[in-house]
Image 1 (spheres, rainbow, N blue to C red):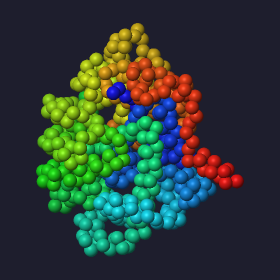
Image 2 (cartoon, rainbow, N blue to C red):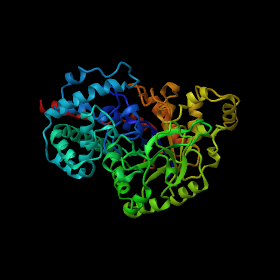
Image 3 (cartoon, one colour):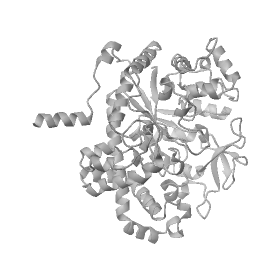
Image 4 (cartoon, helix red, strand yellow):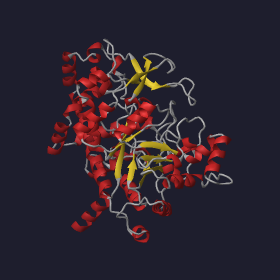
Length: 522
């Protein structure tokens, strides 16, 4: 079935308190997706972020980002007051996230809510269900706070090497701080499940995104050093990245620890089974970042300043995915197969049957070795105008050279490219392709320029900060989105006719329901 959806990170939603979250604006966005005839919402990883604010460098592969907890929900639950939320500064730009300001104030406000929180059966059930990762994460974060935020590789030896007596003392001394982190995860889980269920009820599936690797500064590496290529001092022997190419003369040094795949094989990939299983509790479809790493991975000596001296090593291959399917059944996975692809990677993708990714911006870039032109697509793929790592289509128009623009002009059969209409030209090209699924970043529907870019790979600063303004998505835009989706046969099968659709009022939010209940009592 032909489908379409929107790529928009949760943090990029509008909200009153500095960053997108699971607030009423998230529910409004789901309503807008439905009104526009979409069936998928693709987001970025939901984990807690650290240095650089990247969702791909999280303190835990299981935990949720406390920034996404909706404070207005807590006000309704009497855990906070509106005055307490509004007393803090959350940033001075409506379309930009000020992470430093949010870091300073968010936890201070959440601590007030924690002080009023009363444990109940639902909370105890959450602790029991998530014990396998939750205690380790909370202990990790509590120790990290006590050590001034340092990475675990800089902690005192007793903590760093997980001496049982040192950890026992830490659990006793840091009990309240650990409980604070448990509370955050409970609230995150409860609010996300509610939003996810609402999206599903509106016919919208959530596409989650998981990095292949975990961060070195994470509870995962600290609590499970045996899963990774570490030496006797629990330091990496090699780290992840990409070799030099036409886009980067020295390659990309990601710095993530690499997996000890022989160890994972001995355990029948038990940790990965847990991880993927947990992801499918959070999402309906999962995009796995850097799929190539399961075939071959690039290993860079730990401590090298660039990625130039790395070498390719053998990954787990098809056995890994057959084990996943044996344990968990057939999974809805999208393989991020961008970049240079060898014959063995292509065979692995074909053997899994997972759809790969096609990015239109790459189709016209002479530096790209792969073919991303729409007439070459198989049906079993996902086409994007661009991803979170690309410029917006309008920004692309200004950043690429004349050769790329001329090729796009020729392919589109246009005498000239117009930056005001180019985003819609690309959207129509993607929508009209044979790809089973078409995903368009929200910025492209809004025809926004490079200021709305999400991330520039291998750079620090000014990434992950863009977000929508309140009211930026207008009803007229939703009508246009609906029309192009209908034109190219990507509407959900049960979709109603446009005039009926757009005439309906948006479903009432929790806030409105509360007002109605109060009125009825009077």
